[in-house]
Image (cartoon, rainbow over all chains, first blue to last red; front, side, top):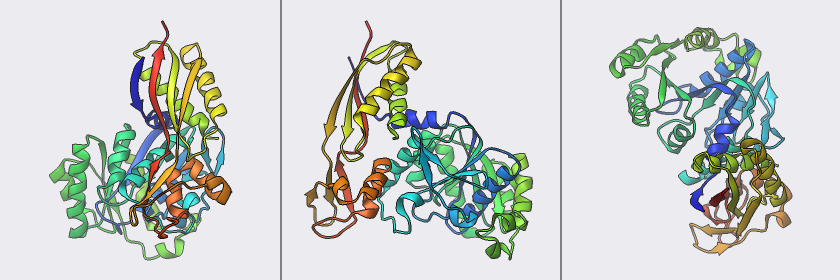
Length: 241
Length: 131
């Protein structure tokens, strides 16, 4: 007899994502830098170019991917939960479980819920699973880096010193966790600050995304979102990812 | 019906720990909170193990762990009765136990800051390999 006292969810999560070719985790050092817009728009761009795409919003305290895309998030059941598709994107988030209610969770609740969602969500065959990570270096980064051995982190910053400084901490944390960093995107800037950062921390500069004053009008409207400067710039970045 | 997903995890975990040897028995501790259908879980473990190791895990021992919540505010403990009070919430908790902290409150002080101190999830306690 072997005593192991193991949680079966880690292996379950690996199985659920075994047919996902690439997992891109969009992360930032602080909130408000446009990470959710870029991750949602990336999922939309992948899907509109015919790639099989999933979008997982792990920002439990401030889920917004569904609002950005105008999607109604839900799931069906078949030996696990099967995310409903919206514009060809399989979307999963905390929204079907919480509705509009506040989520007053402690760190351990977040860890448990990430593991639970990853262990029971059947993504099927995907070219890309885009994950919108919450800002900072909390439980979510630790937990996902443990479970997602194949996750590639895409770091999002603005040119603001506040963002750059927090991103530096995030890069160091990811390096310590030995996870793959795809590179850094500068949002709402000309790219110079992120280029400097990428040289300093020896990570790839992926490109910059211009500020688009029309973004607000495109929120919740995938067709309009695809026509923004954001999507045009992001398209070039996704080609080199 | 995510019992199949859990079963896949159970089989994969014991086979990874058995060093390539076939497993004939597994002992599980199953939390009461998620109201996991044990018949489906046991059937799924047997079916998946047949495929994964060519022979089913014939014996599955299950020990049920009682659900208990403990309030961080008033420190009182209680047992929720989900299936009786609200089936919609019970369904959400079935998939994601932490949903209980969104939809339920401490019956003593009304706080949402409580801990699932017992009855959460599934744990593989031990397994026995084929001779």
